[in-house]
Length: 125
Image (tube, rainbow, N blue to C red; front, side):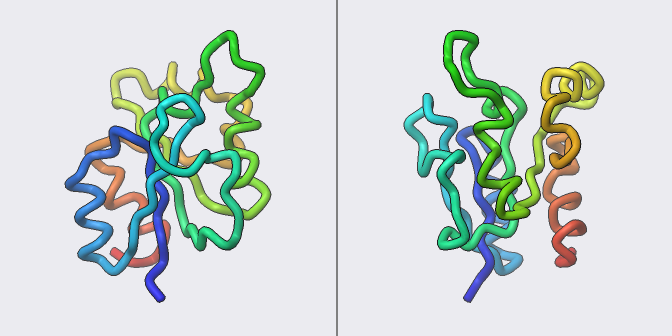
């Protein structure tokens, strides 16, 4: 069975197509607001995810929500699923500060190098 990479809305279709070509399946995930795929906070081993990828803003709940980035990524932390957060190079430092509460277990990558970084991490370059 092919391993599966979860992605949040807005992830580049070139990256997703490349995952497919490299032998992975993809699964749409949502942040609870965008109506896109399975709610990220509810992922579990039955989803068979080997990684999650998305842009920075998708991991940030609205200020009036009672959920934190830590809550949103709870399933990833619990089930040891690596998370790759794409942040443009010119704001990488600021992006890391925005998610400092979860920075101990997420990987920040530039969008242009996200595909290679994830494949290297997974050992399938």
